[in-house]
Image (cartoon, rainbow, N blue to C red; front, side, top):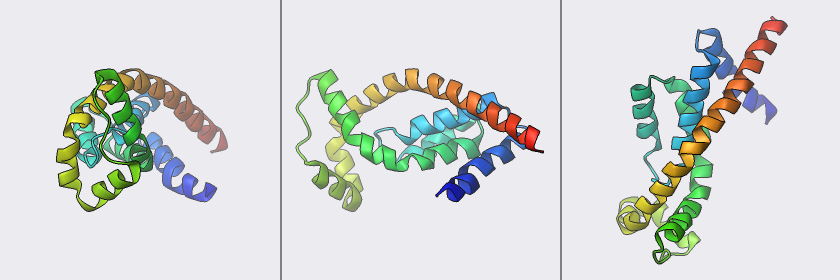
Length: 157
């Protein structure tokens, strides 16, 4: 497992740093990609991360890396975003159980999206508000970690 993390995450990030990406810009790219990667609009993350990377002039590789790494978390957080949206907007809960919802998304994604749209936009509002706080915090923490990676790599070289 450690080898996979090193080869698939750490090494590409070090390569990006060595090729001239700054820890600050890379940290923001990773943070925005991560935020997009957990948004409650299932199936939107790749295109949304690409669009934001282009508009914000972020590193596309880094934003897609964090976006795709967090895909399992997107599925786990989906019901949480929905529930928080229901609580915030004081609407009725979903008419589906968690298992039925995941089965419907897997087998009938478009029909399920149409069914869920009322709850979905409430979840998007909650997600967006949370990401206004989370993205800068993630970017700050990632910047520190990337600087350490770069420094330890320079010392080792």
